[in-house]
Length: 383
Image (tube, rainbow, N blue to C red; front, side):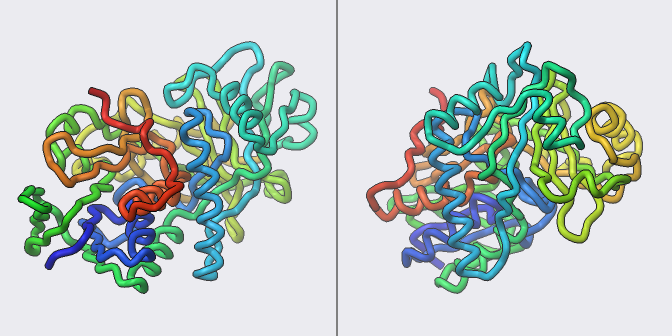
């Protein structure tokens, strides 16, 4: 079977790219080794933070803004609730800059970009934080808060399912549970060899996430690092603290002590919280997917008990996902240097889902030669 475009991987970026190509009438197919949405990659866990002012750099802000527009468009088309703009509180210490995702002053750059792009926000002092958000108990008089009312969370599994369904309705062919084995270029296109047979296309877009390094080889095998991430849901002792104006949160401290999390979802009595771990890395097919009791205890003692009021030690749920990380924490969206016709899309580096809908749109607009596509030139593979 021959297609105009084959998308490898149907997670966050793959589903978005499939949907945007299919809605434009492109003959497109998607391949995934599992049946998305699933919990074996990087696009699960009930919620993903989305922000508008992106401390990782100005190149991401237009993508975040476009993604917010697309989430609302998808909600209108599907009737599903995908994006909750519950606000975001970023806490830090006013006496020191804190690094994050390759940025030397993550909170400061976030506020500066909010100012530059006209994004609604406020900066709170310690007293204002205590008054508005008493659930955050770990900061003293030097606390400073960046609050962004338009931020919140996206439901990743729902977003992927909606985009895949809409892509299929628009004519896309979906091949779940199909493992890709290798790519081979020929004059005029690319052969995609899978365990079930061979497909061809004029172009391939690889959105294989943590499997990109193994599939694409060349420089990618050493450039892309797969890091195991642990997600925890701790039961609330004081649910009232997390009712009403309860934002998503990012708590910045020394590099190894920062964490992020979410308010309870409707019908749940737990907060989701996680820290970013870049030390635990390895082969994506050998990822340890079970969180131990020792890991849960360490998370609670280090991150929850000193910082969050009204949260018990009782772990209701846990999950493991993976970051695919570049050395500078930037995305990777570029042409494969040794495989003509193959576009490599994203190592999300821990901050990707919020941009995925917009990246898919930009890729589809670029393929179709449309004007006004978001600029992706900041995300090329370093020479």
